Each structure stands twice: as structure tokens, then as C-alpha cells.
Image (cartoon, rainbow, N blue to C red; front, side, top):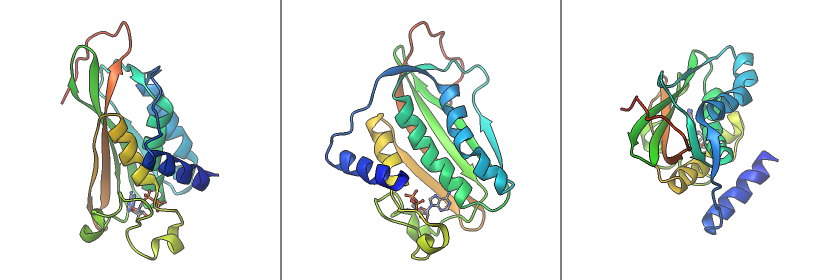
Amino acid sequence: MAVINDVLDISKIEAGKLVLESLHFDLQQVMARAVAQVAERAQAKGLAIQVEAPPKLDSHLLGDPTRLTQALLNYLSNAVKFTERGKITLRTLFQDQDEDSVTVRFEVLDSGVGIEAQAIDQIFSAFQQADNSTTRKFGGTGLGLAITRELARLMGGESGVSSEIGKGSTFWFSARLKRGSGCAPLLQSV
Ligand code: ADP
């Protein structure tokens, strides 16, 4: 099912037919929900998942929580898949804000296998994996990162990764999200 959904999503994106919803949602809840979906797999491997958010986070925003969760999950599932020991961190930072919207940066840090420098430019393309043995060793289709990159773009943001082989990776994306009604000014930004 997951593979079929990914293929459908990438086709929709490539046809320019993926439209994001605009709903009120709580950013902390979205983060918690995404983490909950990988918690069991992480626990089975003995990996801790840490969540870091600004202390005075007012997280009532307007956007597409389902697609945001999907974008986060693609990074989190990979972090669990490609990490054997250590921990995974989901970090949220406010990059920028104005009256109506905030730009949020999401980072998923892992202490896993890392990615070779020459593969980094390709892995965000559809159906690309870092090396030819990835499917045999870990499964997967090579669509998750392409989908997250496109979702970030549709949310007015960008995406990227920094990685060191054998040490781990930090995948990030940003999203410009409208503020929900009745929000206090955000206190924390980077
Ligand atoms: P899939 O995980 O289905 O192969 P993705 O598009 O999510 O597809 O990832 C593409 C490739 O990028 C993976 O096959 C893997 O080679 C590499 N990759 C993604 N996330 C990580 C990570 N956290 N650590 C190491 N390699 C990763």
C-alpha cells in the first residue's frame, strides 16, 4: 500500500495536480503523531527518538497537516531504517515570521550509516537510492525524499541534507505556514 501511495503521489506531483489543504492544526501534535508512527520500529532497534521544539512554541498554524506529517515521516522512517545505534532527533526551528505566516525548519538528525558525497546530489530524485545494494539490504523505492522535496516546495520551502559517512545525516526541509487565528506573537526565532 505504501509503495502504491508513493507512486500515486509522485505521479500527481509530476502532473501538477497535488493541491494542499488549508486547515487549522497544531504543529506539536503533527510532530508527536509523526514520531508515534515510527516509535515501535525505533524501539525494536533500541533507538531513542528525541523531539526538540522552541520552548515557547505557539503552534496553531494553518496548512496541510496530513502532507506535513507525510513529509516528516519520510525522513523519520529513513532515519530509523538507516541507523543501527544511537539516537534520532526531530528538531523544529522558527526561521522567519511576519504578521500572517511563519517559516518553520524541520530537521531529522540520525547517527546512522551516512551518505557518500557523490550520492548526495541524486537521492532527492525520484527512484534514486544511494547505492545499488540499498534495495537488497533495506528495501524501499527511492520515492520518499523526492516526495518530501516536492511537498516542501509546495509549502513554499526548500529541502536538503548534510551527511558524513559512518557518522550520520541531517535531513531538513522548510515550510512557510500561515498562522492560525488568535495566535500570540512567536517569541523564538533563529
Ligand atoms: P527509499 O528509502 O525508499 O529507498 P528515499 O527517497 O526515502 O527512498 O531515499 C533514497 C535513498 O537515500 C535511500 O535509498 C538511501 O540510500 C538514502 N537515504 C535516505 N535517508 C537516509 C538516511 N537517513 N541515512 C542514510 N541514507 C539515507
